[in-house]
Amino acid sequence: MTNMVNAGWVMPEDLHHLTRTGGRSVVVELIDLFKQDVAKRLQALRHSVNTGDLSAAAAQAHTIKGSAIQMGAHNLVTTCRHLELDASHNVIENLERLLAEAEAELRVLQTSMQNPK
Image (cartoon, rainbow, N blue to C red; front, side):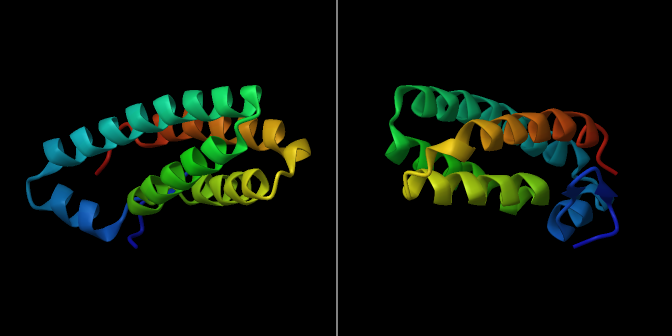
């Protein structure tokens, strides 16, 4: 990891290196794709929770968690880990709160990931 820490986001060293060596536009594109994908998956996750499809909810949380790990979004990783576990074990009382936390974390990431250096 690098010293680029910003509101729950630590830019992975590979992305930081790419930014320093002239690949900033690629990093910006990867970040944009990540944010778009997570937003869509959170919508699908919310739908799954609202319809009681906890298997699909766990799968979405797992996928978001994996993407967040790759992008250094540690707070989102933690929240999605809890979402995945609770959905997998049919612990429904925490899902709404955790989903709201994940959505709030995405809003924070959308700001903190704006200008990678």
